Image 1 (cartoon, rainbow, N blue to C red):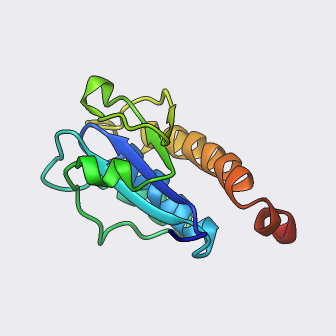
Image 2 (image 1 turned 90 degrees about the vertical axis):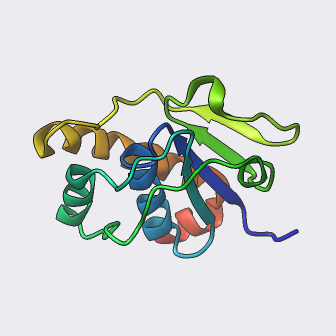
Length: 140
């Protein structure tokens, strides 16, 4: 078992919210956290407005692709953040679950996705401060 905490972000399509959250945690965490994302019913591709919204702030998620949620991915994560996947997320003892109620960016344009992106960033910053407090303090 590694000392590096692992986080799994889950939403239905793994095309918007969970991909943006994983992008933020990868970028801000600097390798201090293992980051994964998945979806209960993955889309074919990532939401282009989510990719564009992240690119505006210098984070490239264009090389990511939606992935299917597996019990193994949940069981091997320290923290599972759900974003509207409902009962599709398997539950295992010893795993910390949190639900982030965020609007689904599917079918929305860039103007509507920006505020969702900004909410996700604030939540990821809080999560990172909790998981890796020494690193967050050093960055301030």
